[in-house]
Image (cartoon, rainbow, N blue to C red; front, side, top):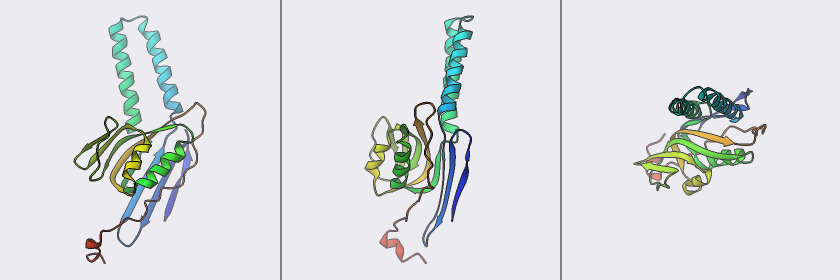
Length: 188
């Protein structure tokens, strides 16, 4: 079954995919956000801060700038530009990032779970089996080729020229999960 949500204001596309095979149940929800309105709001905020700072001292200005920056990053992280999935193939995620890369620069922010991954500081941190992407280039996913990521909570941030339109994307295909031969006998 394939569900593709309608286009929303701000060039957002809500894509969801529900696939069931004989072994695993995959759910993936992907949302992409055009960053243009966010950048306009931040620019207007900094212009207002500059105007207000003329009546205040430098210390007050720095406090206001710090609050504005914090709100900006909270909006980026908790905004709707996210990939959340119980399990998704790395190749699928890489393909989606490549499509968005035709418009501008794509960076990954967030976390996922996979075993046996080497850290690539400062953009890919690894703690146990937990991966943390900090403004990582999608090319770093090439080192994870042929794998699946679990417990995925990523933001795909697209930095593009003002007025650029994000391409329409198909729902991601979580692929067929490979079940180890030792576990095959225990499955129906």
